[in-house]
Every structure is written in C-alpha cells, then in structure tokens.
Length: 140
Length: 389
Image 1: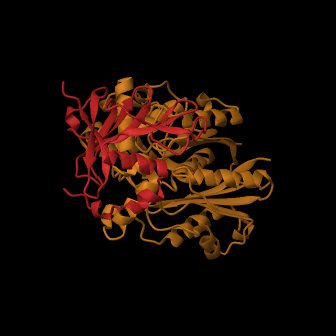
Image 2: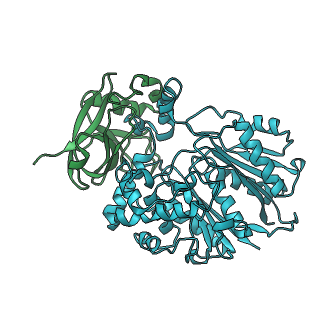
Image 3: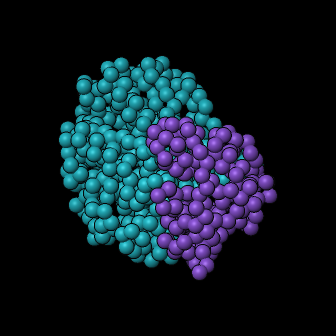
C-alpha cells in the first residue's frame, strides 16, 4: 500500500469544523513558509499549539511570534497504518526549549533517528494546497 | 448511605460477535439483573456508553435502549469520555444512589469493533473525519489512524528515561496470557513465550504485535444498589473512587509521557476516600492497552517505584498467586479491548474475585480490589476501590 487509501477523502470541512480562526491562521502562515505561533501579551507565555486565548491567564491579547527553525527530537515512531502519507510514516515530537513541544512528521528513516538529536524545519507542500511543518535531522 | 455492586455480566470478548448491538445489550442486561436477583421493573436508572468511537452513530442510543428493554426510568443517559466512558457512567449511577434518588441502577458498556481499513466505502471517509474529533486538528493533519503511535512514543521515552529493556517487558504479555488461559471470556487464550513477544510483528516501534491490545467487540453490565438491598451472596461494596482529567488529549505539550498525573491524582483520591494504601490492595484490574503502558500504570497506582515495575513482574509478583495479583483476567492484551466496555469488564472480574467466583483464576481470598480506567493516553483516569464486606 504505497498511496494511502484515505488520501482522497481529505477535505477542509473537518479541519474547519474542529479548528478556530487562530489555528486556521497558523496553517495559512505555513503556506507562506512562516512557522509562527501566538504569544500572550499579558503573561508572556508562548502558546504551542496556538489557540484563541492564553490557557494560563485567559487573556485574549495575543501577538504572532516566529518559532525556532531548529528543535530537539523528544520522541519518534512510525505508523504501519497511515492515513495521509505512505508507509512507513515517521512521526515525532519536537521540543523547543522554554516553549513546548509539537507533533510533526519526520523526514528521515526511523533507523537513523535518536532522541535528543537536533532537527530542522521544512515545509511540506501537499497536493490539496495544504502546507504542513515537518522536521529533518540537522547534518553537521 | 453506601453503594453495593449487586450483579455483573459480560459477553465473550471476540473480534466480532455474530449478534446485533441490541442482542448484546439485552444479553448482558438480563444476565446482570438475574445475577443481582432483581427484576427489570426494579431498575431506576440506566447509564450506557456509545457503541463505538469511530463506527456507526450512537445518537439517542440510550433512548432507544430504554424503549427496547421496556424500562420506565428515573435516570437515563448515554455517557462518553473516551476509554473512561463506562466508569464515568458508573460514577453518575453511584451518585444517583448517594443522592437518594435511585435505589437500583444498571450501567452498560459496549463496543463494536470498527476497522476502517476493512470498509473502504464507509469506513475510510468516516475515519478521516473522525480523526479530527478524536485527536484534534494538529494531530489529524498528519493522518493519525490510531492512538498506537502516541503510546509507542511513550514506550520509547520509558525505555530512554528508565533503561527498561524490551526483553524484560516481554514477560508481561506472557504472564497475562497465562492468566487468560483460565478465562473463557478472553479473546486470546493460547500460551505464548517471551521469544514469541520479541519476534512478533513490529507495529509502531518499540511496540510489537504482542505488546498491543486489539480492538474487540464485547459488552458488560453492572448492577448497583443501596446497602438496604439484601442478598444471600457475599456483599461487594464501592469503598472509594477517584477521578482526574489533565488538560491534555493524547500527547501533552508541556508534561512528560512516562508518568501520568491523572493516575496518581485519581488513585490518591480513591485511596484517601477508602482509607487504604496501595499496599492494602489484594487484587487489581488495570486498563493497560500496551505492555509498557501497563507497567507505567502499576507504578503510578503506587504498587511499585518508578521504572521498577518490570522487575517485579518478571519475578512473578503480579501473577495470580503472587504478592499483588494484577489483571488475573488476562488484561487488555489477552482479554481483548472493546474500549466502551473494558472498565466494566475489569469491574466484573474484581466483583467475581471478591465474591470468590473467579474459577481457575481465583486469587486467594481477596477482600480489597481496585479497578483503573483511562482515556486518551492517560490524560484522564478513574480509580475505583471495592471491598468484600
């Protein structure tokens, strides 16, 4: 199964239904190769993933800030049944110091990855006009 | 006011059952009230779970079932909170008795296996939509078909942080399977070895096939009543409960994934309410859907120190004749995992153990039992402590 059977059933309806206007902006910005999230103007916390308000102080005074393009690989695995990407589909959690973590796709072979390694941002353009963030190991 | 468990019934847990949802529900309902020695007209409240998380709609299922079972009720609800659904339903049912509204309540958990990959026309489009609801936008955009990768990354961190070896972890599925050979309800009853576990197909590394539970079909029902309802059978009482939900769903963004606050906090509440310590528990059933996860749950419940459960398990302490028997039923890995029903299947096992009705897998004379259930990746958790009076 090279092309995932679920691929053709993706559309923006489910995404729209379960997102919010800030999350939509997050993905819109990725289309412009801008990996950003929101920061609370009142308590200074960077929200990752972004949402409509700060879920610590509940302020809705937010500003967009650019996220680091290099993070640390916190954990990773691969899916044997993937909906959107062909298998083996490597996914992982990337950590940004003092900010938080994000689930993402990893552009690399499972066997070549290690917890704690530095990974760098890439923009993954999909056919449906969607752009996602993904990370690949930093080559020294 | 105290609440007793009066009766319980479960179906065989299998990949699929050759009967319909209504047949499964009526079956466990009628057998549970018979076990409880009460009549359908005595039932004041019915609390049930949806039939599946990703399959057919459960809208108005509770209303349909009260009609089908012919019950006039003072309370009726369909309760959904992921894997804890049936324990939240149980919590609601217990509270209605404590509030003195109801005297007898029935809780039913059910799950019908739904594999979207086996049903391209309906299953796949439905599953694509459902993943947004189940896992949220940020995960669903990456095509998360099952929760397995989340638990796999938790297991990977557990190995990394505590130096746990997959060779040692492999003893757990083997012990659980030994227990399941004594449980006719269990889906998997053939013996396995440590080598079988280590050589089984890789699903999501480090999780191999025999480290994983499986989606199953099955149901369970439990009858609760006030302490005034007399029975000739041994009395099993709810002695304490704890419930806690952390503000996260599956992968938490700002906390670890090898220890779970939901488990420690709900266990603490339950132990405190029951006025017992973890060391007082004689038998436990836990919601371990993967081998590594099950070990972390043992630790977070306070049975073992962090990172050490695997050695106690390897040494046989959790076997049926061990110091602290855990999952004498065979656990989720061998019983099978119909998520909506799983917590009540655990409760039924503890109920039978405390009554001395667990057959070949009977633990020696237990008086205090524990049931644990979770949702997400242990984002929310429930602990129930039962005692034989």
